[in-house]
Length: 308
Image (tube, rainbow, N blue to C red; front, side):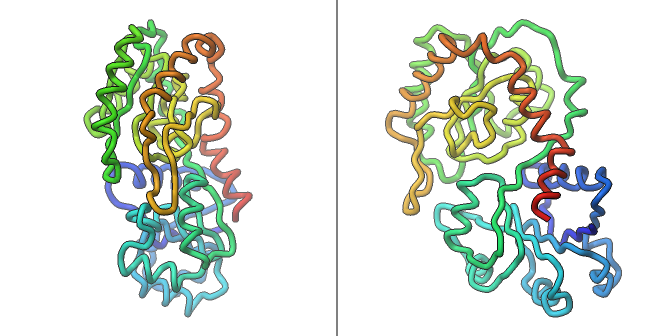
């Protein structure tokens, strides 16, 4: 099956990182071929492809041209087409055009709660599927270390645009963490390099994820690869090897989108205490096995086999 990527993300973080793994996984498979539209010299070459995949927002003119000339191709949208502001829904003229006009065979996103948000506004797809990320497992072997785990809790702090609560809730959470007498290390999103993150994971027993929303984050997959369980919520820790590590510290409504609960610090502290009382000796290599079985390039291709 031949896949043409019609739109793709720029930059080096987040969506672009995941997109790079998406391409590498397909390139390494036996059943698929992938090409970027930028590599074509003529629109007529599109005829050679089975799937036309729009990964991010795109010029409507290319969509209309494709639909006119190649109406019977399989059209795939996602995972980063909708939305710029999920708390709003369609937030600009392009997104309003998309939800009112576009039709496709498959719409994808990285998490069920975000897919449901898109589906609430966008009804033009025949199918809606969660397509989880993949990572290059071979790229982490060199960073594995047998060292003392002297960090009890690694706090991953990621203050998102929509979050006007975290900075005010965190002092209470930090004070209660200190009262537990545990060794704490904090990493802030955008302020560390890859090597430092992996070295810190090797030393950590547990990770507390402070981002109001996240879905199939590569950094989370990496933490679990290094056998560090993550405590979070169902809206920021969507790919936990054990869902019991998620607590009810956030809510999700159509009106307010995702918000921390007022007792977020208490919920997290209780789960951290429970981890050290009941769970720590049972972790072993379960997180790493979960990642290796479900987030490899081979596992990603299994997802595509089912969806395409």
